[in-house]
Image (tube, rainbow over all chains, first blue to last red; front, side):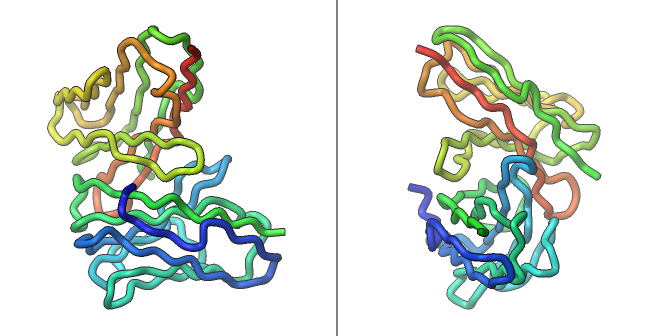
Length: 114
Length: 110
């Protein structure tokens, strides 16, 4: 158990809809990262927050947004969903933001767009 | 664009065999990390290498960071079925964007 909690585990929805994925980091971790993992793209970094502020941005679409709340949990909002958004979405957390700090991953949310 | 290329993409071996997987880049990384991911779960950190030339051992797994900090290897001795999984390398060169390789999918047959 990594200590990172992601909900829901599975999500099935239709094109054009909007969903929110939730992540609770490990106790004491201030950084939260979001990743998208699909079969053809591998694990793609989307965005990182540190103590409530955006720290780094990766290949995140404009239809996607995220935030980290004062209690350090984070949400990833996906809107105007397309078939290609079907993927596993992982959240990870670390104590700080330094490059050599280990990231602890949750078990992911599997998003299926019908 | 900083990329991490992993090879081989897929490896199927018999229990007891040795293997090496590689993680290469044209960019210098301040550190590289190796993760293992099993189906239905998130990646789990195995090791972080920071110093060029560094070698770290984790039981039957040996990790090496290249002298120039552009590449890394993972060697498994006497592989076991429990080693089956997706092995991912990851790094951050400049800035804070994390890059993952596409992974090596290892299957160890009993």
